Each structure stands twice: as structure tokens, then as C-alpha cells.
Length: 145
Image (cartoon, rainbow, N blue to C red):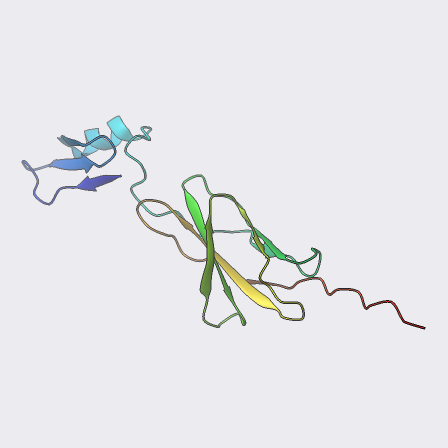
């Protein structure tokens, strides 16, 4: 990750420190943006955007609520959170590296709300729109005659 140093060397020139390669680079800002625009060694300079396309399964999977979403290229990981209502207090369930999470701790008969945030070394983006999901109810036991 690049971090801008606090004091410019001269007017119109900024210095950036790269924690991955342990160098300080000083360039005019316009040249810096051009030189490093496609270079990924310096990592992201902003948090990822908001996650979109979140869906939580509605009783279609046995023993879990499966939560999926559209992946973001700038995301290194995703924080999956859950609440018991759409405006409730969300608790982090897991941090995952793929755009899928199986909530195996969901209890049958309960509806849960999920929000996902994309994260990278700079920070986390805005949370997704909440989506609800629930575990498939187990079939009733066979009758005993």
C-alpha cells in the first residue's frame, strides 16, 4: 500500500512510501499517476466500492443459509455480517476471500439478514444492501403406527 508522506519535497511534488517494497518515491503528482496507474505492486489507494448482487438462500439449502454476491476486483477479502432484522445490530460472522459464505450456524425457523463489505489493505467499503435468508425446514418425522 502506498502512503503519502506528510511534507512535500517541493511545490507540486509528493513523496509516497510503499510498505510492500520499502521504498520512497518522489514524483510530480501528474507523472506519479501516469507512471503507477497500472502498477499493482503498490496496492490499492482507496477502499473497495460497495458490494452488489447479494442473495441469501430462502430455504433452498439443507443446514445452512448460503450467501453469495458479485465479487469486486479491488477486494482482497469480504466481511460477512448477520442480524435478526434488516435494521438490527449486525455481527461479523466471517472474513472470506471468495464471493460465497455458508452460514451453518443459522437456526431452523429463524430469518436472518446479511450485509457484506468488501475490504482491502486500505479499508472496507460500504456495506451491501441487506438480504434475508433462512434454513430449509427439516421434513417432519415419519408417523409411528
